[in-house]
Image (cartoon, rainbow, N blue to C red):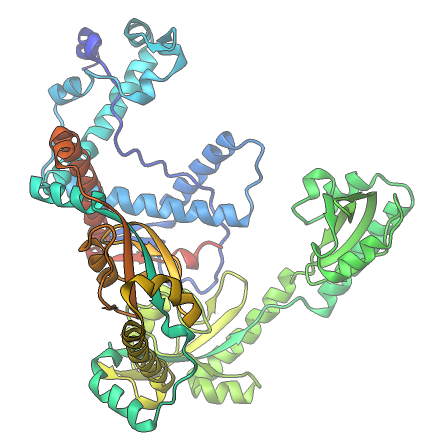
Length: 591
C-alpha cells in the first residue's frame, strides 16, 4: 500500500478527523475499599486499571512536552484525568457506531482522501513559499521521508472512519429554504422603541391569605409533582491533622525560621521547603496592598521593615515565614513586596491510618445494628440528605457522587454502603433511609415558593391596573413625558427582534411582538406580558430587505446547513452517551 501511496503522491493530503489523544499520568490509589475490578465500563466494555493507567501515563509526557514550564498541580491532574475519560468514552462510542453503520475504509478511500491538503498541513512553514502553500515541498518530503509517509498513511486510516461517521450523521439533517427565509426575517425585522415599564417589582409587598396559597397549590399541583426519590442517612468522618502532625510542622517551621534569620538565602529556602504556589519563584508574592491577604498574614507583613523576617505566623493555610522585600506608595495606596515560606498542616499517613480504623469500627458496628445506633454508641452525628432523584447531579451535604445515587436507587431502606473516601480525604458512611415513588410535594414543604408565586401574580395584576389608570389619565402624546413623573421607568429598547432580551425588562416575547407590529411614530396599546404590563412608542422601524435575501440565498443556505449539521452532531453524541450504560469507578482508584 505504501508504494501505491507514493505512486499517487501528487494526490496525498493529511485528513483532519477525530484524533483522540488519551494523555494523563496515573493518579494515586485513593481507596482501600476497592471492590470493583475495573475503572469503568462504556457500553458494556470494561476499562481495566492497567489500560487506563497506560492512557494516563502516556499523556503526562504529552502534557509536559506541550507545557515544559508548567507544574502539574492537583487541579490540572484532575482536569486531565476527566479529559482522558471523556475522550475515551467518545472514542469507544464512536467505534461502536462505526461498526454498527458498517463503515469500511478501502485503499481507494485513503487515496481519495489524500487529494486536498487540509489547513493544518498547508499552514506548516516547511511547506510554504512566500507564505503560500507549496505543494512541491510537501510532495518532496512525502517521497523522501519514509517515516513521514508511514505516519501519514496510518493517520489517514485511523481518521477516515470517524470523518465518514460524522458525514453520515450530518446527512440526517437538511434545512429548507422556508426555514432560512424565516430566520432571515426574524434577524432583520427590527425596531427601536421607548418602553414604559409598569414594573411589578416596585410595588410594595402585597397581602396574601392562607386561602390564596391553598387555592394556588390546588390549581397548580402538577408543578409540585416529583419523580421517585430516596434519602440517605450519613455520617461524615473528617480527616484532620493530629496534634502530633501539627507539632511536627511547627518544629519544622521553627527550624526553617532559624536558618532564615541566621543568614541562609531566603529564596533558596522557599524553593526547597515552601509548599505554596510561589515556591518556584523563591516565595515571591509580588506587590500587594492591604486587604489582599488573610488578616493575620497581612498584619505581620505590613509591620516588617525591609529585609526583616517575621517569626512563624499561623493562618488557615498553614504556617508562614514572611520576608519583606520592598515598600512603596502607588496611586495613593501603600504597597509592599514580600516573600514567604508556607508549611501546611496536613494529616500524616499515620493519621490517615488511624482514621481508617475509626471508619472500620463504625462500619462494623453499623452492620451489626444500624447506622443511627452505631453512630450514637460512638458519638458521631447522623445527618440526612434531602430527596435524591435518579437524575440528580449532587447529593445535599455529600456532593457529586453518581455511584452513591445508583446505590440509593438499587437498595432497600436500611441498606448500608461501604465506607466512601472522598477527594478531600474525608470518609462518609451512608444508609438508605427513605424511599418514595412518584409523589407530590407537601403543601408546607413548598409554602414559601407558593407565597412568592401568589405575590408575583397579585403584583402583575396591579401592574395591569396601573397601566390602565395611566392611559385613562393622559393622551398618547403625553405618555412618555409623564411616565417618569408618575414613577414609571422608560426603558430604551434598541434593535428589538422577536427573541430579544432587554436590560431591566428581561425577555418578554409578547412585548417584542407588539412593538414589531407597529410602524415608526406609533404607540402600542397596553401590553400585558408574561411578567408585567408595558406601553411602547416605536421610534425607528426596519423591515427585512428581501431583495438582499435573494442575492445572498445560497450563502445563507450554506451557513444554516453547516450550523444545523453541527448542532445535530452534538445532539446525536449527547443522545449516544445518554443511551449507553457508562459506569465511572475512577473515584475508587484515583485522587
